[in-house]
Image (cartoon, rainbow, N blue to C red; front, side):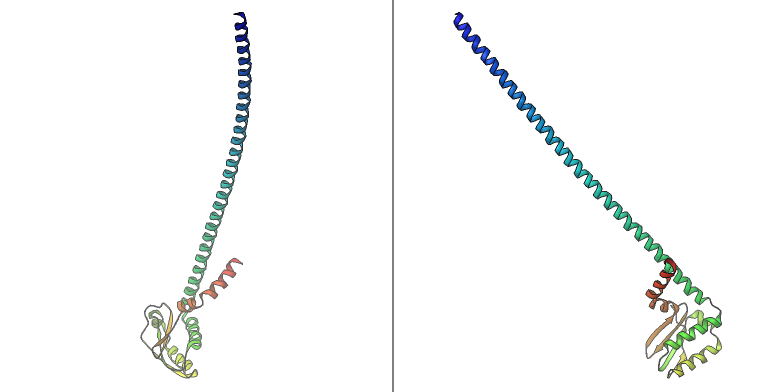
Length: 197
């Protein structure tokens, strides 16, 4: 039996050595898998960090762009409000001139807008109240020089200053507000250059 015990002992020893080899190989394989997993995890983390970094940069750029647009809009709105204020103040200053200067200005406006033919001139209620007696005669002389005639009509509601000419049912609004509105773009450009250049 000693021979069988030796054979069994030898088989056990070979099995143990083979088991050690299998275990060592398995441990080596496991270490290799672990290293590969760590490399993959590191690569995945690096890619995620890179994507996160890019996302943060993109978000920051968008936020900055949005802030810049908002700032530009606010500046533009402030400039526009300032220009509107200057234009309103200009109309008010023209309206508040003394009567002689104010009606001299209206005569110039009339001379530019009077037409041939018979027409009427109607002033704002405020201007009708302060209309110099000689103005209608002067307006008729201006109309006659252009080949037409003018008669005074009832005051026009809805305008603050100036007058409305009417020829055959067609009206020409010569109020200061209408003149400023008709020339708004050019006036705004001049005011902008004066204020911001």
